[in-house]
Image (cartoon, rainbow, N blue to C red; front, side, top):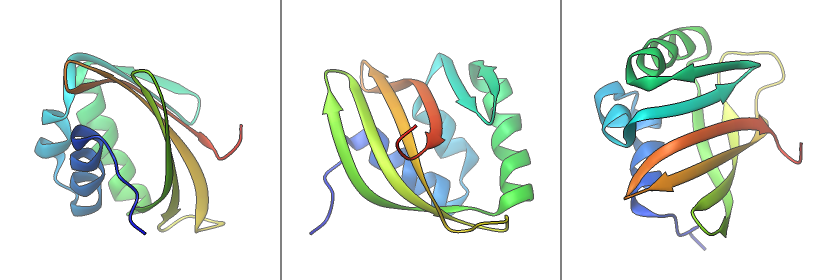
Length: 112
C-alpha cells in the first residue's frame, strides 16, 4: 500500500530522488530552513548549495515508509540509501508546510 503524502512533500521527495535541484527549491518557501547533521541552512541559496554538496557526497535516494501528520507538520519516515557507511539508514524527515510550500525540514535518525 502506497503512503499518501501532501503534494508538495511528494514533489520534494521525487525531485530529491531525481536529483532535480531546481524542482526541490520550487517546493520551498523563500525563507525555508533545513536542519541536517548538526547544521542549519537558511534560505534557498544555502539550501541549494547543501543539496549539491550532499548529493555529490552521498548520492542518496529515499524510499518512504510512513507519514504521520500533526497539523502543518508531517513526519516522513524513509529508508535512505547511498554512498555512506551504514547504508541504508532509517531517517525521519520532519516537514512543516506553509501555503503549499515547505517552510522547514529537520532530518533526524528515525525515532530521535
